[in-house]
Amino acid sequence: MSLEQSVVRNHLLAMLPAQEFQALAPYLVPVDLPARQILQHPSEPIRALYFVEDGWISLLMALQDGSSVDIGIVGREGMIGTPILLGSDRSIVEAMVQRAGSGLRLDAQHLQDALRASPSLRQLLMHFSLALMTQVGQMVACNRRHPIEQRLVCWLLMAHDRGDGDDLPMTHEALAATLGVRRASISVAAGALQKAGLIRYASGRITILDRAGLEAAACECYSVVCAEYRRLLGNDGAV
Image 1 (cartoon, rainbow, N blue to C red):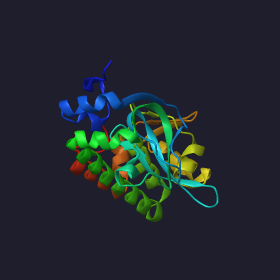
Image 2 (spheres, rainbow, N blue to C red):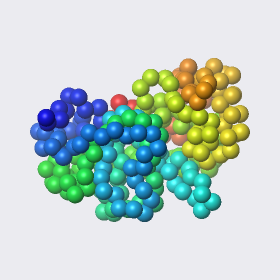
Image 3 (spheres, rainbow, N blue to C red):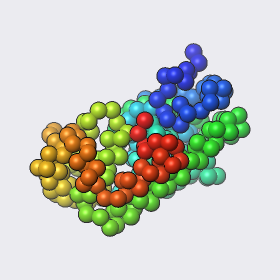
Image 4 (tube, helix red, strand yellow):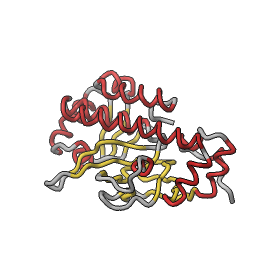
């Protein structure tokens, strides 16, 4: 059966004109995205684009000591595989499913045909790529200049934007790896947020209790990223 645009949750695909979506639909393959699945391996050929329908994907930069740092997060506002759009089939960035969900896969071999058939798709993907570049650049600056508590708040807000509901399944260990800091630092920062009544943490799950309070506690990085998503895509990263 042909995929119906009315049931698609991905923001980019939902914004396509109906006729252009129908031309693309036969090439979109629904896939499950289990936690920890690698969608883009560093320095390996990128064979497909993934339009996220549910869950979120972390973009990770590996360091020589074996650690990695989260430099971006993608949910149903976007897709994985932007290097292909820029003329490269490889990237040094790893894309790993952080929260399990689902997506629509478009094989790289069909991409150029899809772009020729859909001028709107080309523009949307380019605009998303620009918005993602802003997010990555701002997160790098945030990691360099802002204290861990603000960095944690920024990441929690972006994850909350891309999820359903207020629960975020993340352990302190996973958050420490994501932000590139010691677990003890996450414990202190999360403890402060919990004491302030902004979040609740228990058994590997963070619950957002006061969204407005988190936004007030965030550094400017979160608002900068949201503003760029709104400018380019008409939303702030959430759908």
